Length: 357
Length: 273
Image 1 (cartoon, rainbow over the protein chains, first blue to last red):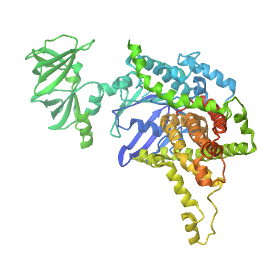
Image 2 (spheres, one colour):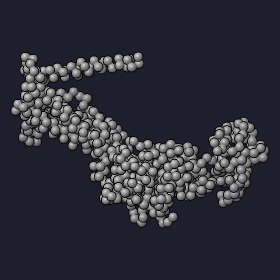
Image 3 (spheres, each protein chain N blue to C red):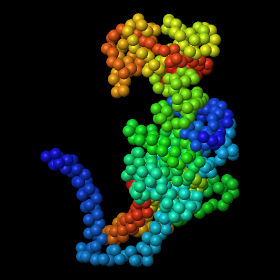
Image 4 (tube, chains in turn brown, cyan):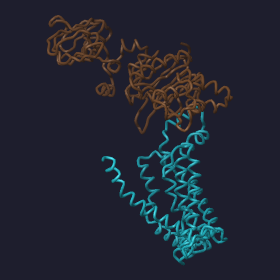
């Protein structure tokens, strides 16, 4: 991955007095698959629309390939967008949809014909040139929308929840398709989604957003294994998030017990969030773990059982491949390495969101 | 059994259509092709070739087309502006524009008669500023104006509806693919609103072509449209055969224009009328 292709500098955006983006800084490297991930209203779509040119920021600059494009209209930007609901031109044939951008840039007829053929082959819809848009399924329409964007050979492809309207199986197929396309075309993808699994599957880099701020940016592994705050931990996968006190380095107390951990540098007797992933908790015989509790529900999920345990006044979520009876009295065990300690969010805003998430 | 009951439900409509559409048309056809003694004749149809009738028909076409063009030129930008308004009560503003439709249209035309007459309110207003009286009533201009005023909502509604239906993402997509505002309008917006335009043209042109009340009230007998000729043959004399014959000719013109517009609208989708 090479140089920085797009840079957002100190971007602020408000709508009707509501702060959507607050002093956002972000860069995208050449040939990177960057995903903006967050709940609805977190500012991810606005960020994408700013890059696409459909919105202008109140303050800040957008640099593309070394040039300031902040006030450039969308038709003069060398990037293309795949929209959430495809936005195909229903009054045109598939070939005309795909040729739309090429005709505007005054390419030769032969070139356009070749490109249409090539693009349809790329999205596995050979021979669909003269079909009407209405005759296509949702997944096929999505492919045409992608074909229509990539024939223009943009440096960057923006994708706004492109798989949101598809069913699960189709979505999974399209995820692999998109990764293949990106590798074949060698262009930069900026992808917006609220689906954490989609983000983890496809991205090189994930930026987790909430309330107009980037909460954390990193590789999928970083984001999952080392969430920086309780919001990220909760949003990416399931988590047990408990109020705790960091007594000293490598010792934390929560729900009335003390437990060893590996984190340092939080100071002494500081309130923190303690995060434990459900798959990191082992169910053991009562009395042999860090805490005992009663199993309140057991749900079979295919790969694992999802078990809820009431212990110390908190409903713990545990993923395990072993079966346990509802109502049994058990203990829970976790190795210190799997306990993540996080700073408490500082603003009340962050806390509010953490509660609804 | 089930089907029979369903068919029974269609009964009232069947009675309605036969009684109030099919029968009257058959009667008009009968009168159109017979003379006063009941014998078959082409004369009532051929009567359209009479110079007075031809002149009235051509004037009707001219004023109808003029009215339709002005309505279209007024409605399209208006519908675009209404659609782009970022206000809460957009539909209320649209409602206000369409509101005159709910008022008796004869009353509205009578009001314009008062407003436009030589001693009317508009000329009275002009005289305050020393502007000489304008002769407005009883001109072709007044008739076209009345038609535009009456039929404008029928143009605004279908066009506005077709513009509203264009999703913002579709426009964004065109811009994204490199289209400037000009290309976006002519390649995307205009084709997508074509069905609305076609509906609007039909809904304005057909009543304008056949209108006779507006030309009566605002034309003062000086503007003779084909509608007036037909009205007079029924009401002022008892030339039912002639009136029916001319009605058939007019109906053919209406059908031709509708077929023509539908052909034009086919590329854009389905007309709503």
